[in-house]
Every structure is written in structure tokens, then in C-alpha cells.
Image 1 (spheres, helix red, strand yellow):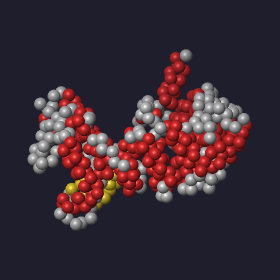
Image 2 (cartoon, rainbow, N blue to C red; image 1 turned 60 degrees about the horizontal axis):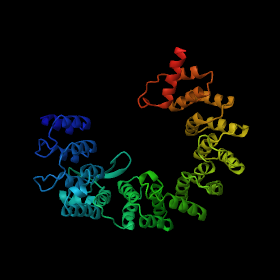
Image 3 (tube, helix red, strand yellow; image 1 turned 90 degrees about the vertical axis):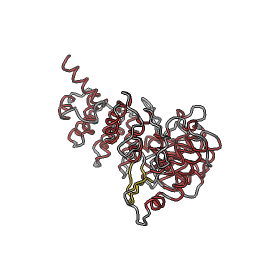
Image 4 (cartoon, rainbow, N blue to C red; image 1 turned 60 degrees about the vertical axis):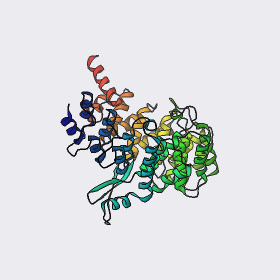
Length: 449
């Protein structure tokens, strides 16, 4: 029932249609024209959504195929961590016998250790170099895709090995996992991302200590890796029993106090510290406020204010420093300082003048950032309102929307003109935007009052 329709839906990448057909009674293991289950088509085309819909609908990822493989084995060979995750399904450790789990681990390990291109050459029997292209394997992480003699694989086998180990509760040493992540040198690569995720689940003193030890690694990239993983230990919702939030915050404070030579590492360290409410943060921020690298200075404002609604006013030295940073030569630093000043707006002429200057900043991205920040600012002065009104001339719709919304919140008499100058409010991607919702409510009340 619905076999041809299911084959067509899978071939067309229509995941929602696949789900509807399965709910209507279509066989999830329907064979396509090549004699293979439709799940193999989703695997071959790296269609994660369709693969997930099929597995959720009952497709068998462990079904034996004519060549002796299974859809799951083919997914591992294909090198996409996202596809493998879709085919692993729920509780694979309970579903798969130990011998099969070991075979899957060995297969992923061989692909990873030999390299995807070497394996691809062996399978195609050609020595030509593979065509390489970077593709997104999921919404956030990328992987290299290789094509040779008509065959395509993705080089995500490090991530696949890491994910399989965790799914089967095999716990390699932290150093082994770290080497997989660091081999790519990119936090947005699937190998790095999988290691970060797995270590975030391994909530133990042993794991935390091993990660924290990378603080003293000689390579800046290794220290960045430590911060990237430690950040996940600050998520109490990830594991309320063992978050290691306090231990991580203590380490961040100690690290920043002792100093960090690499600017890119120091900037990330201060970013993480800015997510805490440690009393030492202000002193640390003041220490680095005049750092030579703008990436570091841009993280200082978050350390000089206690975020809240409203935020408490900063001390005199912190306030002076924020005003100085608001005139920094770097636009990102100015924008960060402006955000902090808006959150603690004290109504003084100095702060108001700084906010107005940033709303009129010569750099477009600074004006854009400030237009959003000022919507939450308590400053109701005429100078700020005039600067917002001037932003209605910007070409960027989000900036004009922020300006109109901020004027509306201030009950400015120019709100009607601001809304009219926005043009059409029916725009793709803004269907549930809180600013447009407020404007629509304002218009309705105005017409019906």
C-alpha cells in the first residue's frame, strides 16, 4: 500500500510526505527500483530528514542486503555523522548484539585511521585525486565531501566513531577524543563537534579534570578546545546532578587572573566568564579593558555589568571604562560597550551622549547592533528618540524595524510615520517576530480606540 508513492517521496526528499505515507500504512522497508530498501536511497543521498522519518516509521536499519551490508553499515561507509545518528535510532546498544557493535566500531575506526580518500581509492581502484568540497552535515557543522570515479563519501568518520562509542558506552580516554577534535583544527567540524557533545555527557570528576588539564597545553588551539568543552559543563540543564558549573567557574577565574597569552584564547575565556555572575568579573574586565587586541576588549563590557532587568548600575571605574570603550577604534568594541551602557542606563548626559553617538556611528553594523539594543534601553530622552528616528532612513529593514519598535515603546508621536515608512509588514521570516506583533497590536488599538 503506497509503495510507489513512498519511493517517489523518498526520491524527492519529501520527509513530511514520507511520514504521512507511513502513517497511512505504507511499508517502511519498501524496495526501490534498484531492489534495495528505500532507506538505502536516503542514506546514499545524505537525506537525514527522510532517513529519520523512515527509521521512526519502522524501517529496519539492520536489514541484511544482497551485498552483505546493512543500511547502517552503508551509512557508516558514507561518512555522514547525521545520517548514522538517524539510523542508530533509540537504544542501539540494546538492539545490536555485542559482536555487531564491535564490527561497526571496527569499520568506523578503519575509515577514520586510513582516511576517507584512501578508502575511496581502494574501492574505486583509481589513483586519481578526489574532488573535495565542504558541505554542511547538519545545521551547524561541516564536513569534507569527496567524489572519485562516480562514488561519493564524506570524511566524517572521526565523528561517527565518537558517536558510536558513546552509543555503545565505550569510553575512550579524553586525550584520544581530544586528538580527534584537534586534528581538524575547527570547532565547527563534525569531528570536533561530536567530541564536544560526548564529553559534555561524560559528567565525572575524571573527565572534567582531564579536560581542564588542557588549560596548560602549549598550543593555543588545545586551550581553545578546553574552553569549548568546559563551556558545556556550565549548562546545569544538561545534567543537573553533575554540572561541574562551580568548578568550571573557579577555573575560569583562576585562568583569567593568572593570564593568557594568546588573544583568541583570552577572548573566548572572557566570553565564558561573562556568562557567569562571579564577583571577580569586574576586576578581571578592568584588567583587560586596554588590551592590545580588539577581540579581547570586545569581551570586557559584559564583565563590567551584572545583567538583569533592570541591571544594577556599575561602579564608577567600570562606568568610566565603558564610556571609554564606547569610543574605541574598533566597531565591535564600541557596539559591545553600547550594549552594556544601554542595559544600565542611568539617565546621565554622559551615557545618553554615548548611546546617541553609537546610534549615529559611521559603521553600519554598530548602528544595527545599537538599534536592537536600544529597544530595551530605559533612556527616554529626546536625543535618543531623534537618533532612532534618523535610522528610519537606513536601507536595512531590521534596523528600520528596530527603530520603529523602539519609538513605539517610547510612545513617541512619530510612531505612526515610522510604521508607515517600514512599508509592507508581511515579510518572509518575520511571521512570529515580537516587534511586528507589537506594531500590529498598536495599529489595531489605534484603529479601534
